Image (tube, rainbow, N blue to C red; front, side, top):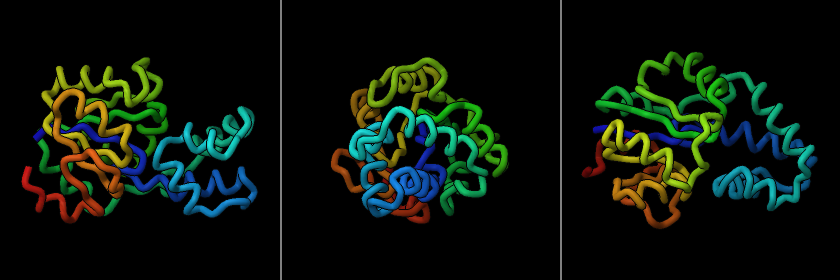
Length: 186
């Protein structure tokens, strides 16, 4: 099984830290749950929804880039799936250096054959450009992501999809935790 993974909110539990950053930027004017629901669409959607200025967004990216990896741990049991796959690749909008810092901190970089990061020049999801590149190179069997924009490019290519901790329609499979992954009939 060759798996294409999203990073934030799929491999690593980054949303609590990102929600805290939004909460601080919004000076506590909305709940963390409301922030999370907007982040689950996309960062740019949340920034627009909360009418953040360009300066606020820049400051938030600086705060995000300075987060210690211990604030963004891997999801429980995800490593078992990584070990069982023939090939794992990542497609994320996050900058490469930030992804590598987290992967290296948790000694997980070796599980991945390739990383396509936000600063690699590919179009942003849901554009399928990066998925096409990775699928042509690794013959992807499954895409796992936590947002609809992670699933849509895979559906365009006819690749099976798994939505993690998000019940938005359109995925082939849904998981709330990785303990249940091996129960899916792929």
